[in-house]
Amino acid sequence: MLTGQVLLDRIQKNVGVPWQSQRSDGFSDGILHGSADTAVTGIVTTFTPTLEVLRGAVASRKNTIICREAPFYSRGERAPLFWRNSPAPPKEMTDNDPVCRAKQDFITQNNLVIIRLVENWDARRSDGQLRGLVRALSWEKFHVPAKSLDEYDPRNVYFQLRKNSLGRLAQDLQTKLKIHGVRVIGDAVSSVSNVALTHGLLLVADSERMLREQGLDVVIAGDAVEWEAVPYFADLVTAGKVKGLILIGQQASEEPGGGEMAAWLKSFISEVPIEWVPAGEPFWVLS
Image (cartoon, rainbow, N blue to C red; front, side, top):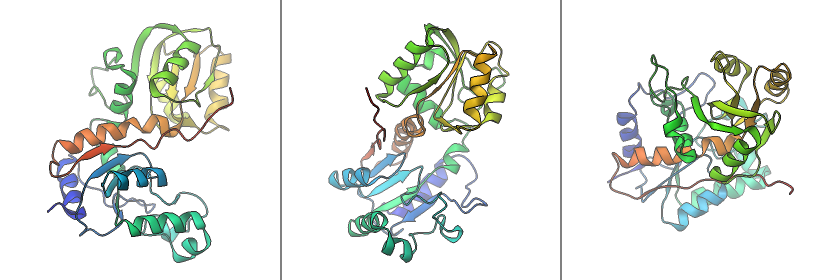
């Protein structure tokens, strides 16, 4: 029988790197919520297990969710250090926070198992998050791999696209990823071709590394620290060093990796159905 623990054991066996059970800051991969002995009826992969995702999993008779982000907003200041990745939020939080209480009740009542898989997934030689995003954009043929790196090495993020304007490139991203909250720094009519594509949070240090690649026109990322990376790029554009920065949103940049993870799980899990269920873009914008 495929239980939560058997599933986790298979993931550990197939991930291809020495398993990290816990980071120094308390975050860990593994079963966050639910019993390891629960029989798995189906698996959903997603960026973050929102209540909507959980309801969809239950409706499709899948009781196990594998995600990048924990379900209880544990990275904020409101989460005490002793509860960054414990099996459940402290009783004080569920008693005082109706959102946490409702979500915890839903997980318990539906016998759900929630597994976090981030550190070990990202430690693999092939960057599954980047691969998923590239496939969502149909950019495989535009990848320009460095000779010294694997094709989807996390540091190998360069693409040579057909010449386009910065504005049209941003529109193309919006259309292919079916999102609304794209933000751009730079002149919309400037011509771009050489692109660095990354996912998640963009730090200045990451930007500096990518910009060592000669002729880079634009960097595409999930989000950025607005008081740091954003003015950094604004100054780069003003100085003529790059044409622009496009931010597609943290969730939009990471979500396609859930599809890649689902495909990977299917290569060694055959007993139950596996489905990628995107949490969806959380924002809408004024027209």
